[in-house]
Figure 1 (cartoon, rainbow, N blue to C red):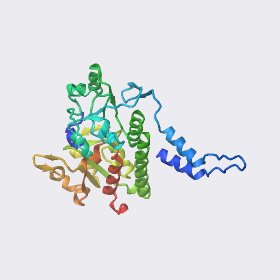
Figure 2 (cartoon, rainbow, N blue to C red):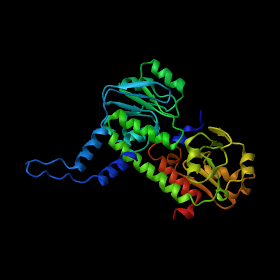
Figure 3 (cartoon, rainbow, N blue to C red):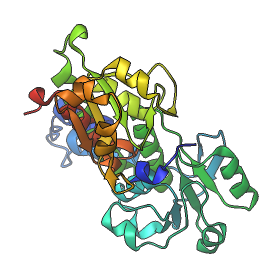
Length: 330
């Protein structure tokens, strides 16, 4: 699994409603009958609100293929994944959340929730004592760890997002499970708009002008193809120099030098042996000859925006795009 995970941790509905409102006019009152039809606009609003109410029982499937049937919205929720915690809070579920992992630090309200231990191996006793209806976990927990928790009778729902669309789909699923679909649709509408804003801004970049990008989220570790962080670089109009491999992996310094990235992105909260990650990067032998280093294009980003596949992932996308093409985002 990923080394130094602490550093890593460190549209639709609204559009349909708009079209419905634009296409519907008020129904005319029938003369001579003494009654009137309900305005079509109100009918559309009522229908939309009905569509966004979860109909129970609801059956959903998680990333491990496990199926869950909910007879009603869960009233007690535990999350042992910072990204999932952010999503649940963004859906307005503060009152239902009874526990979070030791690393969950956003939003501020998450800090006051009962701690449930780590994100790869949470405290089993604490989770059992919380007596939650559902426990959410994310990319940091292996399927084997999930299986062991299930053998203890814990109902645990695992996500494993590999793309922005996966993150959005997870948020929509959380909205259905908790009967907070309206909040979920508002959130994903904004996220999709963020993606549109970035893609529109970088679409003028010609293929031969795309900048080569290297990202380091923990000392000596980067990300290849098949993960959401790689997609952030691609959607932002860059080319990930580490995309010749899959997943999260330790770098070969000579390969990075040979690839000569135009931009280096790093998690700005990482400190190792009293050195920040950019200091570590710049001090490596031969790296002073890399274009990004020579041009002072070694740019720190909020580690949480860069690495958490939650509701702020599209804010992270915007920050990545600005770092790669600052002239397009003034």
